[in-house]
Length: 303
Image (tube, rainbow, N blue to C red; front, side, top):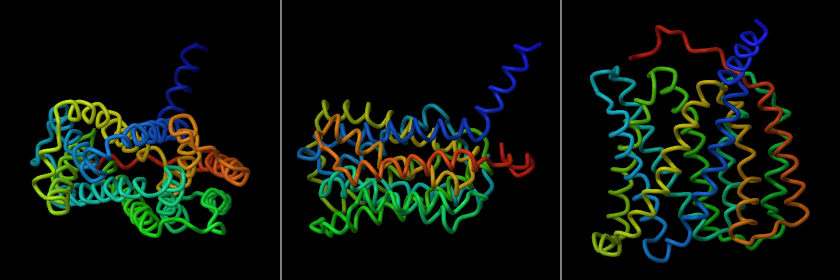
C-alpha cells in the first residue's frame, strides 16, 4: 500500500511542476552542449548554414517519427503551428548569428530577456520577486558597465530573445490544443523550410557546395540533440508549467551557458558573473515552487 502511494506521489510530481522543471533543465543543458559543439562548424558552413541544416534534419526526423496528419488539426491550430515554426527558425538563426560574434554566456544571458519579459507580463501565477532576482542576475552576467560588446551580436541576441519569448507563448498554446507531439511535428518542418529559404537568400545556392557528407552526419547528431530533443522537452515542460514560471526558470540557461563555456570553450567567468549565477539559480528555484499549471480541459484538445 505504501509502495503504491509512493509511486502515485512520484508520478504526480513528474506530471506537475517538478517534472516540468526537470524537463526544462535537461533541455537547457542539451541546448548549450549542442551550441558549443556547433561552433567549430561555423568556418565551413557559417552560422546560418549550421542552424538551417540542423532545423531541416530535426523536421525530417519528426515527420518520420510522429507522422502528423493535417486533417487532425483545427484550421486555427494548424496556422499557429506554422507560425511557431517561423518563430522557431528565427530563434535558431538569430542566436547562431549572435554566438558567432559574442561569447556563448553573454549571448544566452541577453537572449533570456525574452523569457524574462514573459515572466513579467505573461499569463500565470508566478511571483515577480523571482523575476527581479533573475533580472539582477542577468545584469551581473552581461556586465554592461564594461562596454565593448559587439553591437551587431547584441542585436542578434536580443532578436533571438524576442523570438524565444514568442516561442514560449505559442508552444504553450499548441501544447494545450494538440495532443502528443503532432504540433511540434508540424512546426519543425516549417522551421526547416523557412530557414532553408533564409540561408539561400543570404548566402546563395553556392553555399550548398560547402556541405560535405561528414558535416551532414555531424549536424544530424546535433539536430537530434538540439532542436529535436530539447524542443520536445520544452514542449512537454510547458504543459506542466505556466508560461511565466517557465520563462523565469529559463534564467538558469545563462548560468549553464557559462559552465559549458568554461568546460568546453575555456571561458572563465569573473566574480560578478559568479554572483549572477547564484541570483539566477535562486530565481529558477523560486519559479519551480510557484509555477505549476492546471491541466488544460480535455475538450480543448484535438486528437
